[in-house]
Amino acid sequence: MGESGAATGRVVIVMPTYNERQNLEGMASRIRESVPDADLLVVDDNSPDGTGDLADKLAEADPHVHAMHRTEKAGLGRAYVAGFTWALDGGYDLIVEMDADGSHRPEDLPKLLTEVTRADAVIGSRYVPGGTVVNWPKSREILSRGANLYNRLMLGVRIKDATGGFRVYKAGTLRKIDLNSIDSAGYCFQIDMTLRVLQAGLVLTEVPITFVERELGASKMSNAVIIEAFTRVAQWGITARLHGHSAASVRK
Ligand SMILES: Nc1nc2c(ncn2[C@@H]2O[C@H](COP(=O)(O)OP(=O)(O)OP(=O)(O)O)[C@@H](O)[C@H]2O)c(=O)[nH]1
Ligand SMILES: [Mg+2]
Image 1 (cartoon, rainbow, N blue to C red):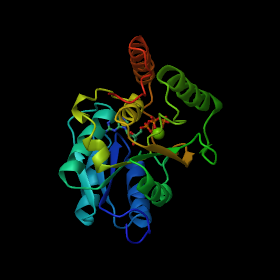
Image 2: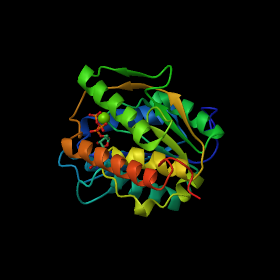
Image 3: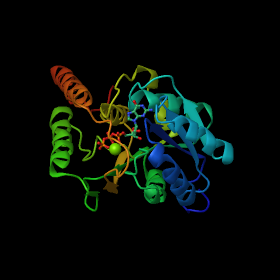
């Protein structure tokens, strides 16, 4: 990241998309401006709105942009595992997770990439001092804050925003995690990854971000996604307690 003065090494931003045609081009150009040396991998699940075709066009026009096409909507977790595997095979040093809907601001990338020099992974956090959420209805904020409180109580994680999806992982961090055993489809994937990093005894830090509610396109949040997270967190939490420790403690 010569220009930004942030971390060194090859950086790739992995961005899962499903029906994000209205958001993708603007996000791609903001990313290219904010971190000019970084690459962007769009992981599209055959979006009916043509997001995948647009990703191909952007990739043709710019060697820093890559498009991966998957056959059907299988959840953001599976898209990320495919993208991470591609990134590790490609020899990238830093792998970024980022939504395509504008909630994660590309202008915050240099800050996250600087922070990861002091950690094994970094979460862009809405809930540490200085973090904010813009344009959320109260009900949405209550759901997110409630989910994070539930995670802390159930799992024993001290992380304030374990569901946050704006992150940077060092390649070595992802190599220590068995990506193929991950079976969380929705935002539960973020909690799953948080636990796996902590269980590996790695350093996971949070930096404040401003999270902006999407202005274009539709949210993929659903009851099924909420229920997946709720039941899995309960399973992880209770199983660990039965073994006499918290789910977030280091595996011996
Ligand atoms: N490839 C792929 N991407 C997905 C899938 N589901 C969601 N995404 C992408 O993952 C990112 C986050 O999805 P959102 O719809 O914004 O869901 P969210 O951020 O959890 O929920 P909101 O707070 O309501 O926006 C976006 O870039 C989506 O396009 C999926 O099944 N496959
Ligand atoms: Mg979103």
